[in-house]
Length: 212
Image (cartoon, rainbow, N blue to C red; front, top):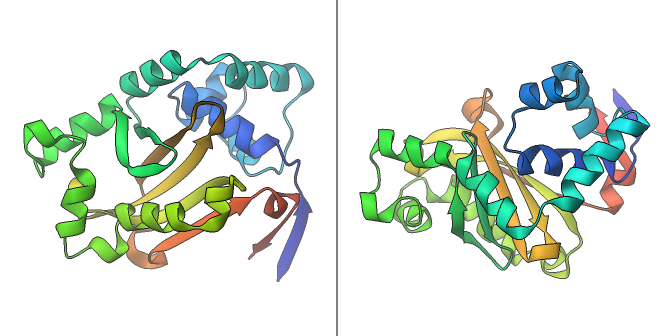
């Protein structure tokens, strides 16, 4: 059965970008705005619009973060995330505390290579074809990404540098500063879904279909 629903074009992107800029999980963001986790999930899927006062606060977060603060927030965050050049998605500019600590624990890269040698490590791995590095290369080569028509991308892939775990990632361009924010987490679905790269374009967000 197919269900259709209308989404406000700006809500999912702006809400998620605000949350990522603040380095928060959905639970932490929910606590900040005194709502439950499910509400944040519905905001980020475009199924629910925040109340006007809340929406103004969220928009202010995205509009008032300058470049330096973006980098400081990413660097301090416990969440797995990177800030990369919008034209060089596989080359990190800044990596979060969370990903640096994870790489230290796994020990897959030499200390001097962490975290900036991840793409090189992935390309040498037998898991390269289903890796996050390959996913980023696919996105980078897409004409819609090059034209700036992609609002964000969702990826299900393997992270060879983190021991071959399956992860879910969100890649959000920050065109105002020619950068891209990448956030990822271990996937509860594991290998079941297989390698997937999905580009979300502005026109895609006006009418979304969900299969059940």
